[in-house]
Image (cartoon, rainbow, N blue to C red; front, side, top):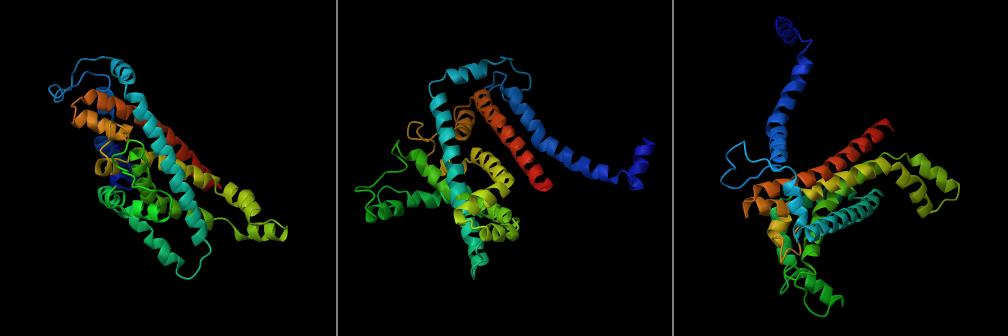
Length: 300
């Protein structure tokens, strides 16, 4: 014990202390609740037994009953569509904007900074804004689509089961596009311009330079962005609470909102914990992909 104390006072163990304190802080505030949530998914928990730690152990019964529910697979399908469409839309638009601002025209840096306004806005504020834009009676989106001749009558984006999920997807794409643009802009700035000059001298056109230089050199950055997009999209809750509340008839319900609904509206805490554990598995997989992508980027 004396050696440990002396190492901390003479500076040799100071770096260990700097690491131990943040790790202990994260373990208490994040690790213990996470372990508690996993344990709760294997127990029978209701509002009367929530305050106790030792509850009836039911094994995988919660997982079996969850997948036996009729609404489980439609909600998981909605989650997959929401994640895939959001990531694809954010990436494509963000990549296009990153390439556009890469030309460094006058005022590009200022204009690029304005795009970050959407990223720093709270999700509930974004949801309130898009509630007005997506309004079926006087919404801006319906007006633009009508004037462009795309639709002949108003679409009730939030209350129509055929469009309610896409209403949240559109809002989420707008929310996350600027984040993709900034990260992709950083990746583009790391590509040596000598490669493009040499390819241009060899007669490569714009598309050939894009496919043979830009995409291969951006592979690690793209992997990191997609994995981060998966994590952030699965955490998206505010937009569903502000725009559709998972309705109508679960047509826009997704796993993250469903877990909250089961826990804090239906008071079925075990089922809510079970849903969140399934999401945790997906997030852990995305985290592994992200770590591997950043390692490869650093080595390169």
